[in-house]
Image (cartoon, rainbow, N blue to C red; front, side, top):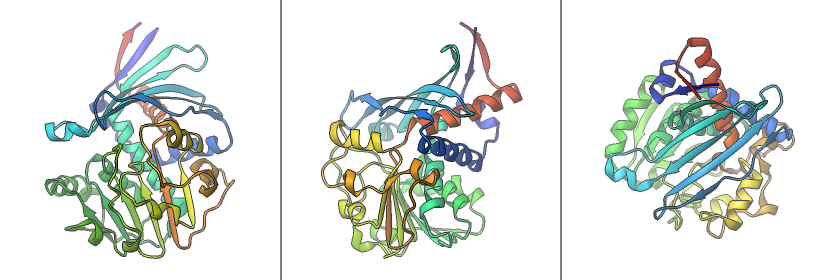
Length: 327
């Protein structure tokens, strides 16, 4: 048997676009809504305070038939060391035999599938004429979420940004400027200035066990889409509970984490307050209101990882990318 090993640098050489990742992420969500996958809630360990290492397995059925697992770590303390917050590896398995067929870097996958999920959410829940987006947290996730939102909402003309570390603004600008067209970046001095009047607000801050929840509902416009990529760390509880439509990316994982996980403190929507998950929306089973404040908590699900990894694997075989190792 041969195992294909693919590094982050090798993935980047293939020039995979955010549109391609959004396409496969959305397809996976359709399959999820149609119950054509096995997707257990992520489990994990927590070796340091506010740090996690999660196991994320998934099998996607249908015409994809892809299986695998991501082993991913999130360490906020790495930022002070000049190291990435998120790191990980992904193992792709042959669904027919169970053999591992590829091991690949999960940093690129996590970054772009997370942004892609927000873009897909905006496609279904944002005003298609949205012109102003706000991004709070300007690390890698801030970058990829911005690019996906611009792909989903082509009329965006202004990107308001904020990070508590001012040096992050220049890094963010250097990443996004080549791909934002005529949209302009507006650095803001505080969170209130960033989110006020925005059509879409996305928060990409570190996930913590005891959040301050610093984004207030009174700062937001009446018709807005709010997307939390950081569990319950940024938006105040009433931003979510007061929404006309609240969704998550996976009901099972959201409710399991709320009841048994380290993260999710009291106050966020419970089962009866949830319209559905993104699988329901993408499969056409549920339809959100596009009026008032819409809200989403996108915790990150393994189907996104497997769909993206399968895309990478197919392209790597076509292009001859990666190193083969006998096992």
